[in-house]
Image (cartoon, rainbow, N blue to C red):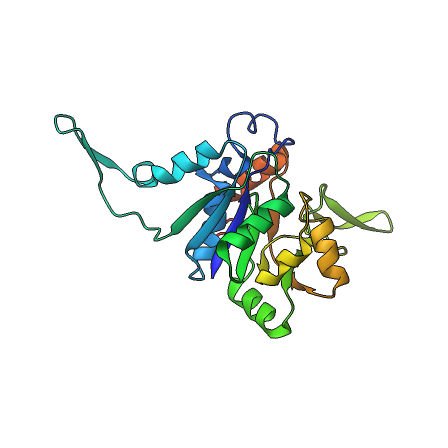
Length: 253
């Protein structure tokens, strides 16, 4: 099964990055967050990706075109003008780079991905990492028989959580996962019939998902583990800090 990744948006809230590179190319630990997402899927044997491009698509194209050179030490023969990587790249990925338009919203990009893949596929955003078990997610989707599955997550709180009893701090947690609301964390599994619910150039999260929900064709795989999106500079710093710790929760490979 192929994995579609939405990587065409402007990322307007990510000041300092979005004017130079698309958000999925913002580095965490020296690698684009897009790479981290792909490594998570590859851990479960899903190595075929279709990346929906838009804003600054040339940056992502250049990255994958030169992936062997970027990822390896090189031997360069100046006289012969030959450059060779010193070892084989570990990733055995097949990456399709699909131009889905500069101004299209996510709904149109999902439609174009679905038509291009023309089979059931997985879908996620190019700006969020997670330690969801992809095998269990896929098994859940196949078992319920509906058209679509989203991964529901509990987002990290923006501030530290303090529990107080009789004026004494009982527990303190710095930016814990919230214990109440579930939100859409991406990491979808979709069947081709979802195309029937996409009309016009809308946000995937609005009209299309609303229609699929009303048709009782959307199920939620509830993930209690780690999930983190990258919407703001603070999110970038948080992910960098987690990576620097040596044991980032999303690193399952």
